[in-house]
Length: 285
Ligand code: SAM
Image 1 (cartoon, protein in one colour):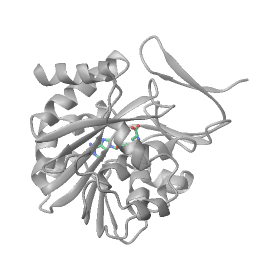
Image 2: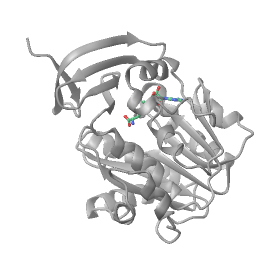
Image 3: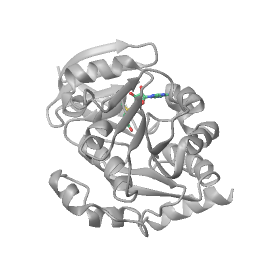
């Protein structure tokens, strides 16, 4: 019997992956967690039947999420990661010797523990001494935090279930307050392509632009996320992602990155007309 995992990208379109093994399935306190071993993508895991990460293309998402703001802010010392239970964002952050503290706030400890066991490609740096893990809701954490950060990375699920609050006005406002005066926020910003994710993209953009003086999105091609065309939000109190682009080229070259480079950085902020228009419409609503 052929075994296939299907993710419904819309009500009428689904994406399928043929797998060899479905080796973990668990209803956690927050969501359904599944791990598979596939023929062409290596191991992958899903939350509520939505692809989170797979061994073949996870580098694209994590490199773009982390190296982009680090090439703009000249002195990132304290970083807050919200979500990101697979550890991929933390892995990329630990490559920077100048970063002193990385606080990761993940609501679901089961995701972290399962990734530490079955998905070490991303999780193997969660034991770095600079990393402190908090298993709690990111929404409450940013409300109560007295610590100030240079960079906040919102590596969240979609705005449904536990991830919903991470797309709220209250959450973005509290992130603004706990960022230093030159702080940057990057976030998982959905896809502009299908109507369902486009709506979430527009809602998030409207909220973020009403709080941060600089707020835009940048894009990457991620084959296993709906449509493949995926966005990240870049919001900042001071630094412009292009005008203030000042990468430490030799340091980043030493990382051996597979996707991110200085030309990709600049190009990723150049948006197709239909995306630009959708964002403009969202701001004007
Ligand atoms: N790259 C992924 C994507 O876009 O599909 C996201 C990866 S990461 C696994 C997302 C994590 O966010 C999950 O582990 C989930 O448990 C966590 N999460 C969801 N809601 C959260 C919340 N309110 N506070 C903290 N973490 C949350």
